[in-house]
Every structure is written in structure tokens, then in C-alpha cells.
Length: 335
Image (tube, rainbow, N blue to C red):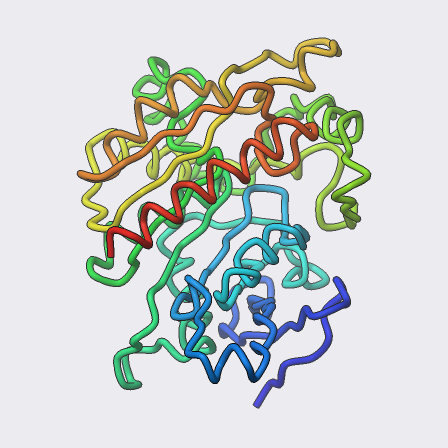
């Protein structure tokens, strides 16, 4: 049986390898990273003092061309008593093996296996006694799309869904119905065909420009390259299929919070404007699409935020955490 071992992030972080069988590129694994809250002092336990989220498990899923590395985000939750888990999906980050095509998949539903394995390791599998702990799903970008679809397919499983700039719609929403049939044909006949690289590395540069010395992060460029990983036809069709499902309307029965930048900026050339806006998604379209996730959706627009709102410049980053804290406190009080 695999065991928890120290993670590359050091400190309180540990990782667990989840075996997922194999495909035509060899063995598949996902990797679960965890950080647990510190044990409360005995005098607090004697007085019956509880942290507000001591009955909560958080499961984080990263975006495209990404992996989990945000220590502060984990500590936001553990400081409030929650157990924090982050999943590096198959063929990403810690889970990428030699000979595999980074991030490649042809159906986002295949990640059900990764998520099921993670929940089992967290003590939440269907075979065990139903957990009394609440489950919060936390997804960024493509991870937000993946978790939204998963939560809609698995009602009464998540207690809250929090999405950090989720990729819920194609960047040119009106063009998606026209592009989708072509993408389907490409995926069927040449699924590993690679699209031309259009990422000039400006999003990575924007993060570096606004790096916060009070909240330093170290990024493994092998796992999160400065320019996005190659986009294959099969993967692109899977994304467009997910967008179409969101557009048709999902049925997430948990409360949903969507955190977004207030503005988008087109990354055709470098400018300082790219350090104060989402240069990946059209945030107005994402805000509209978010209202189709379920009956209870809150959209938080954060001035000056980047695509990953928690990697923005100091002021926007602190505002993102304030908004998250406010929403979580309201969600907890409404229990």
C-alpha cells in the first residue's frame, strides 16, 4: 500500500501516490497532497473551543498546464480547522511520468477515477461509513470546469464549490458552436494533433512582475512551464464538450462561489495592463456562464486580479482572501 511521504513543498505538506491503472502510454497515477490543521492546545480542548471548519475537508484541483504549489491557500483552510487536500491529476505535475503526453485526456469524465481515488484516501469512499465531515471542492481554471461537471453528476456529495477563475466558456463564446464540430472531427481522426502555440508567456511574466514578498511561491517550471503545454485536438474537444454542458445548464446542489478578476486583457503584446487583469479568460463571459451552474451562485469580481486571483499583486490578492473568508463565514453560519 502506498504511504504518505514528505512532499516537495516541505513543511507540513505530505503526498500520496494513487494508482489508476494504465493507458496506451503506460501506468497512470494521480498524486494527493495534504496539509492538516495543527492540534488545538489542551486548554482550548478542555473549554470545548472549536475552530469554525474543524469538520471540513477541502479538495483542490489545479488548472491546465499547472499543479498544486500554493502553500498560503492551503493554510487559509488549515488555520480555520479544515483538512486540506490537493490533487495533481494524471499526467500533471507530481503525477507526470516519462513517456506521457502532459495533461492529455479525451474526456473530462475520466477524472472521476482520480477524484474517486482521492476521496477514498481522504476516508470518504462509498464503501466506508458516510463521512460526517463537510466537503468543499476548490478548483482553478480547467480544474474549476472539471469539478463543476463532477459536482453536477454527483449530487449530495459536495457541501460547497469554490471556483477560482473557472474555465466555463470558450474565449470566443459565440464561436464555440461553430468550432465544436470541427474539433470533434479532429479529435476523432487525429486526437494527438497539436495546435499552433499562441501563448507568448505574458501570463507567467505578469505573475513574476507582481510577485508578493510577503507571500513567496516557488514554481517548478517543468510542471508549470512559462508557456502553456501543447494543446492536442482530443483534449481541446473534451474542453469544448464541457463548455457545452455548462451552457446547457448544470445542477450543482451545493452553494457555489466564483472568484474572478474584474477585467480581461488581451495578451497580444506586453503591457503593464496584463498585471492587473485576467489575460487568459473573458471574465464577463465566465460570470454569465457561472449563473448556469446551479440555483445558488455568488460571483465575486476582484479589481486588479490575475487569472489565478490568489497569485495577483498584493492588494488584489489580499482582497481575494478577504472575499473568500467572507463567503466561507457566511456559508458556515448558514449551516
